[in-house]
Picture 1 (cartoon, one colour):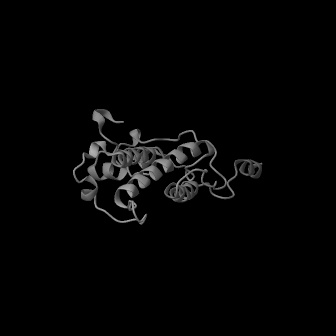
Picture 2: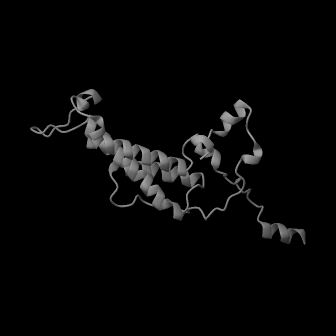
Picture 3: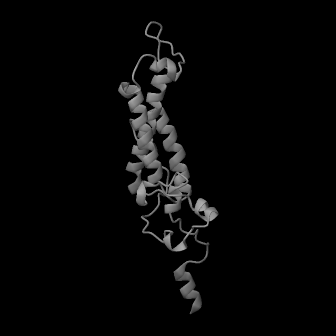
Length: 169
């Protein structure tokens, strides 16, 4: 984290503001091999976590940003999002105790006469969101965190180093 507790600025913001420095931009970083196939969501995820897993794993694989060693972190990211969505659903779409049917309520109705700091659904929702946001930054899925990732240039077909060496002889 930069000094003073400030979050990183996206590269485009730095360019617009005129304080972009190429020497402070990331260079080549070590990269484990990327995934060759898209794995199924791990067992035990709720529906929101599974949906996010399918979306993120596809996008991260296409961008060559996910490796086999990243899967546990991605699972935690999706679980945090699932926890956030379940808590949010409990707040805004609870079940009626008598009929069992779901109904919609507002945040004001939920908090009526209560302290938001002691409501378990509210604290769970807030902590789930915070965890999810932190994992998004780890995977470079927020505008500011994308500035920290160096994506290698796509390799041109036919430029195999061994083939190039053999053709020179």
